[in-house]
Image: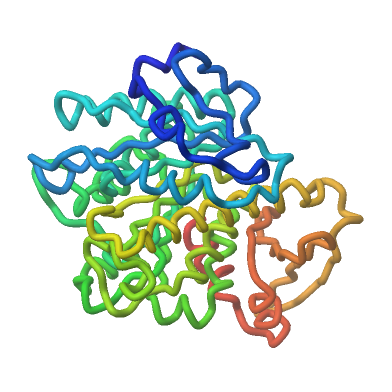
Length: 376
């Protein structure tokens, strides 16, 4: 791995706040901090890094202090998962131009990915999600991507912004997005033709009402995804007052924490980004506290992924043979985590829910099975 310290600010948050005192069991006392004198994070499972680049929204926007505002709250949380090693690399330096910042972030993300690290990125504007994707693209890795956002950022524009980055991610060539799932959009903010476009591409999307009613419906998508991008505006304003584009409707705080736990438990998930947080608008640091708790639940999910049985050890899975619509299908349920998978006609298995099994048992075709077939 190349030397990365040149991309980061000279002083880490922890060095600038040496007066802060932490309990020995709080993350502020247990995280590994990458400073100029010690930039070795080779034994870390999860790596945190900040990028406060905001020029994807406004050309003259200042570099955001959002990552450090989140750290202030995150370091106060107690570490219940000492077996998972976390390193905080600090904040990327702002480039002379927006493209310089993006290039630096892309380089760092790719190096960390090649090193086998799970990366948590503290943004910045959501166009930085494109750098999450391009770290995979540069290695020609086909991925599944999930975005949680009240909006669907498919605007057409000459430059890449936080309202148009999905156009490049989903339609650029060559393309390495095998499947895309959008969580928590609010219909009145989304042009109907955008949903038609996503549907034609056989991508999945769950509006906020349906998602809140059946939160478990999002778990299979997050279980097989490699990339998860969260815009804070997916959370209702009352639970996150720092939302740049706040809405009275949206996910509750505990619901978005459940989604990050689902993501952490996914065996393939190694790139998580938080975006759209403005500390200047944060009332009593409530949004920073929420993001910190989302990270805590993500780490909690990572512990769950370690507990899952080896896929080749079928004794660890209960088997259920179901016939629906002339299809003989095998459903598997993990005896350790109670998660479900269902078999496709080509013999592969995809993540599913108990509801999919119950629907198949009624001789109905589960929509998840049907859409997977259409994509094949």
